[in-house]
Amino acid sequence: MDISWIYKVWILLLPIFDSAVSSYSEDQCSWRGSGLSQQPGSVEQISLHCSEGALDWLYPKGALRLTLSPRLTSAAVGPGGSSSGLITACVKPSEHFHGAQLYLERDGVLELLVGDRLETSPPPRVRCFSRLPGEKVALFLQATPHQDISRRIASFRYELRGDWTARLSLDSNPIISNEGACRPCNNTELLMAVCTSDFVVRGNIKAVDEDSELRAAVIKVSATRVFRQKYTLFTGTGRLTRTGEIRTLLQCGVRPGVGSFLFTGRVHFGEAWLGCAPRYKDFLQAYAQAKLAQQLPCEMAVD
Image 1 (cartoon, rainbow, N blue to C red):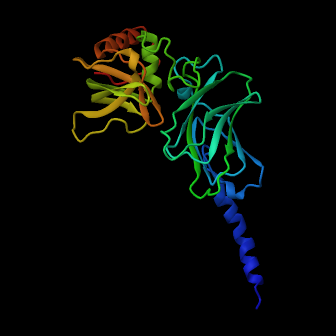
Image 2: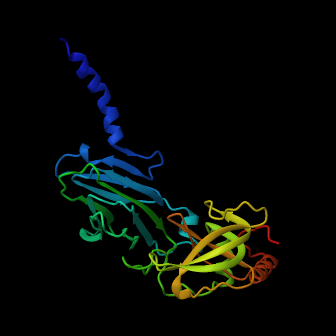
């Protein structure tokens, strides 16, 4: 029996198989691969070039070394630009992160970010770190030994920004440090936030709840006008109002009350986080003064 055709078919399919077990997304923002294709003791080098994306490592074996070299847009850099060159990165492990440990590699020194989890372990937290200009920083994933790797998947999402406060530790709030977080924006910061934020919404505060996992206040907003939203954050069936949630630090002491506000902020792992939030009448006054002085960074259709 001639079985040479089997080998010919296998040779044809091998490149397809290799591309299936390890591949970049088309935009070079994400990577998905399998430890089954790695040699024992090897370290696969991966490089991603976006401000946000994901990594999925199936059946972890060996190790991965991931460098993040984002091409940050002006919107990702934030109001006023990032003159320091500092970039802050946050990683959010999946709820079922198993089979590996995630380390921060800074100038050759490893620091544990996420350990291998047991089935009964609580969901891993978002971890953040900052990179100074000239620092060599990478993420290092080391597979942990398991007899059965069939159900092991080490997955996480990442985000990088140049506008988050520099003084972030690995256990700090994933958005901004406490220092100055609750300070009201001045007019210059407010008008720049209107131009660069992921969402700009006019609305009222209906309720404030607590997110114990993130140690954050969750503001329930009834939006009467959505000027801009990067993602679908505020939705509703009504023609005049939409509803959505915005998070901020607990210590800012946000309370429900009367009045119309302009909410601006950033989207962080699919959730809205508060930036500037003046009363709407105060925003209109600042906008009118800047327009009269021909100092508007951008224009918008206000009431």
